[in-house]
Image (tube, rainbow, N blue to C red; front, side, top):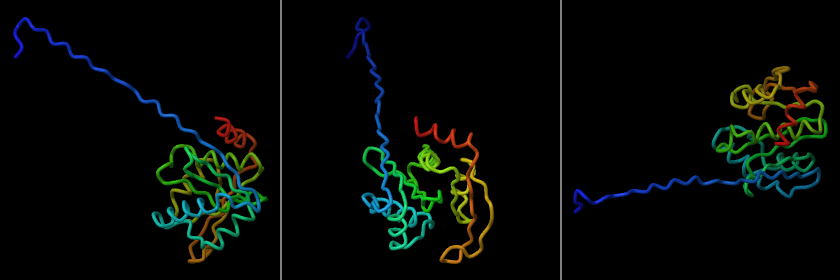
Amino acid sequence: MLGDDDEVILHAHASTAVVSVTVEKRVDGPGATDHADEAWKLKERIRREEGVLKQRKRFFMDAYRRATTHLLYLDDDLVGFATVRRDGYILFLAVAPTRRGEGFGRRLVAEVAEEHRTITCHARTTNERALDFYESVGFEIKRRIEGYYEDNGDAYYLRLGPDERLRDRLSELIRR
């Protein structure tokens, strides 16, 4: 028991943990499939959770092999990838659901913009999250295509470019 003359001194120690993360860019060029299985697993996780990216494995792997895929890793975990044809058409763009809103999608589009004056893609008319993202980086809907997908779903054809200012802004994201 403490008496009136006893002094109690409490020390509080606060510490802030600084977490360092490394974002690493990797690229599989045409003919390379070094990271294809990891990309397939991420795509499939998104398909199961969100009902989008419904491509079959053979189609996915064939397209992946013929195109260039930009991949972003965060401490050795794949967080997103963009597979793009030589003409600047994005075949697949995927970001792990737990990592959305952190700039990975923008960075992937910026990677593609470094190599292509114009970028195009399709997105389901019902995929509001994807459409909001594409609009936020400057894509414009050029036309609606009914029955575009294998399950007869409709798509929008989207285009970005050739606005040089936008390409410069996207390219800045790569340098950060």
